[in-house]
Image (cartoon, rainbow, N blue to C red):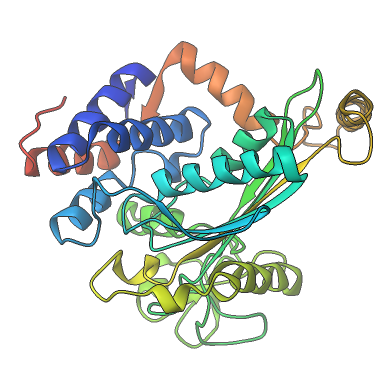
Length: 348
């Protein structure tokens, strides 16, 4: 395990991306997103995929200096193409567009296609919340080429991790934010367990016959993820597929050789809603603060120290890691060092 400050890590990631072909703006935005994910404790969406991005650029699957553009637009909606650049750049642009439209139209829906991995979804709903808006992100399409998740009651993969995020601002209290894969575990956690020779928790994956297992090797031998929460997580997974791939028409924008198997059919829908749509923001904020305080005031159950509101853990982790640095597992850091070397950058 090594520890890096956020500033040092940002500088190193940006140098790698610039050397790989990204322009200044794209490299800055991606580095900011990845390091903020690590700061928030969401290490699965931090610097971990940097080697994947570098390899994608080298394989001509990612256009590292491309910019997003609007394909279709109304006063309350837009469809954005990422022109196969970094998903973080496209998703930021799409959420900014949704926020701007919602400021004058109360509600806005912006979807995106033709983009690589968009990273931590919570990043985008936090953008909306910072502008006193409710933000939502629904993403799907990842299982069209390489399905990795079995449906509830099924024994063969047909879907994927299909993530969802919702952010709700408050007044004096912190933003309430949810960000989760609709599978029991993210794909990165399965990869890491396999690479480190670790077992997975029960009811996270199945083997090739649809039998639950804790051995990550079974996942790579024809197995699959399980939806979280049984049939309830499965239905949310299906909703993300509809609002992501199907609603956006992402299949119509596929270009072979771009984005890689998982991201090729990706479609993402973002929604921004003004919180003062039905009442003054001050009244909304007062009620939101009261709800968070009421939840935190509940006596903890045995085995727990306190009750947290969604988003509390990420906020606390950011404060701690800004003070103490960001811990990075040795195997992840070595993979980043190797990726840096492949584009002529030396980091330590």
